[in-house]
Structure formats: C-alpha cells, structure tokens
Image (cartoon, rainbow, N blue to C red):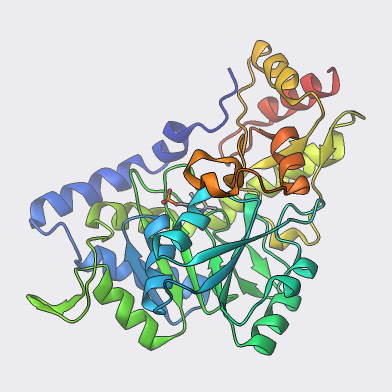
Length: 361
Ligand SMILES: *Cc1c(COP(=O)(O)O)cnc(C)c1O
C-alpha cells in the first residue's frame, strides 16, 4: 500500500532527537511558554524573514487571533477565497465579521486577484488569502489593492511553510500570517500547533497577550484573551524538524516534477507552477471528470489518495445562509479534484508506481 502520507516514517527520521528533547522537558518540569517555545519562535521568525513569531495552539487560532487583534468585528467585511479549507473562513465569522467569498483562478486554484476589487466596499477591512495546496499566491495585484483601499493583508500559510514569492517567504508576504503545525502539514508537530508571524510589533505584543488569557504579566489581564499556547514538547519537536524543511520541500518538488513530466493521460489535468520556488506542494492536486471512479481504481491498486476538499465551504451546513449561492469554479474544483500521494519519504519506486497506474487508467 502506498500511503497518502506516512507520518510515522516522516517522524521516525528524528526519533532519537525527539526522545532526547522530550526527556529533557519531562526532567525540567516546565511544560508551557518556556525556552523551547522561545527558541522555536526565534528560529521560525528567522526562517520566514519576519521580526516576530508567536506560537499558538493551532492554525485556526492563529488566524482568529490576528483578526481579533486588529479589532475587526461585527459589520466588518473580510475578503477570502471561496475555494479553501473551511478554517480560513471560520476565523472570520468567529470574530463576527462577514466573509466575502471570491472565486479562484482555475489554473492556480488560488484566489483570482482580478475578481477582488469588485467585492471591496467601505466595510472591507482586510484580504485573507490562502496559499492553497502549497503554492504562494501571486501577490502583486493584492498588494496594490491593499494599498489603494487601505486594507490589511492576512496570509493563511497553513499549507505553505517555506514557499517563496519574489524572494520572500510565505508568512512575510502580508501584514500578518497564520501557520498550522498540524501533523500532516509540511512542518508538523505531534499534535496541534500553530503560530503567527508578523513585522508589526504592536500586533505581535497583543497576540502574545491574547494567546495567554490576555495577559503578559501573570494575573494582570489587559485583554479578554483565550488559552492558545504552543506546548514545550511541540515547540521542541518543530525546532528539531525546521532545519530539514527546505530539503523536505525540495524532495516534494522533485516528486511533483516527476509527476508533471511523466503522467501522460488525457483524462488528467495537472496544476503547473508559475515558479518552482513558489510551490512547496503540500498536496499534488490533479483534476479529472470521473474523480470518484479514479480514486476507487487507485485504491484497488494500493494507492491511497485524499480529496481536498469534497464539499466547498458555501455548501456546508455550517453556512446554511450561503447554500444557494453559486461559485461555479469553486464547485468545479471540488467535484473534480484529487490529491495524489506526495511526501518527503516516498521512495522512487512508489512515485514510479503512481505514474504507471495513473497512465494505465
Ligand atoms: C490546516 C489548515 C488550517 C487550520 O489549521 P489547524 O492547525 O488544523 O487549526 C487553516 N487553513 C488551511 C488552509 C489549512 O490547511
């Protein structure tokens, strides 16, 4: 069986270092907001090229806290892609803001920058964009719109650790960015984790307090905060893995290029990269008309795949008020998309087999 993602194999590469780190944390008796969190925050900020990084409990909290810290709430509109994982949109509605959905570009699957301006009103406060499936959004037009209408640019970088656009990494392409370290992400811990990156000191200070009950000094609460911290164990694990992120991403690129060059089947549409460095291939998405049949065929040939995602956010029960809206490009993507296996620990034989079986369909 070719697994979609072999997490055990990914993490076993670092098993010795993990054991050592976990033992040290157990021995120290200090489990939260300690030196492991501080060190990882410093290293990840350095990696992204930002001044600040604040560890939080997960990726959804990272985005929710950014919007909260800017003070956006009821009556404020935030532009967001219609084609995304629902967490991007939940972070907006959880703050009481109105998500304004924008269709993707059918070639990149990311938000279509040409469709944003018509959605901007005098209530619009921010553009929340998502570097979906690991490919950085082409930012030029978005930066220009943000400047013209005085909007914040918030990145959802949960699938794009290490992606580079015009020499800058995801996490450093807007005013603030949320990352997830969910186990299956390109940089993942062994549970839930996340962080915010930014160059804005005021925002960083506020989020640092908000994640800890709104407090910087114990028992002095300046905001109505939440409890959303990055545990010492997760921070330590992430710090062990961070130095290998670039080589892991390169392995993903090599596999993606092999797929792009060798999958030859008229029934399969593949997404191309507009720039190698911009894409860290969190997943390798293909589109095909009879997606469910193709998935079943791969399964019968011992190849595990996943659908990212089967139901678009506007068709979810959670957003009943949108169920009658029509986003044809988003719907087309959800009906036809399938993610082939890709990961830094896949062997050449496995990659070849995926190509052979796909070509024989
Ligand atoms: C994973 C993910 C999130 C949420 O991160 P969690 O850590 O699972 O809360 C948000 N946005 C996108 C695009 C994601 O893929």
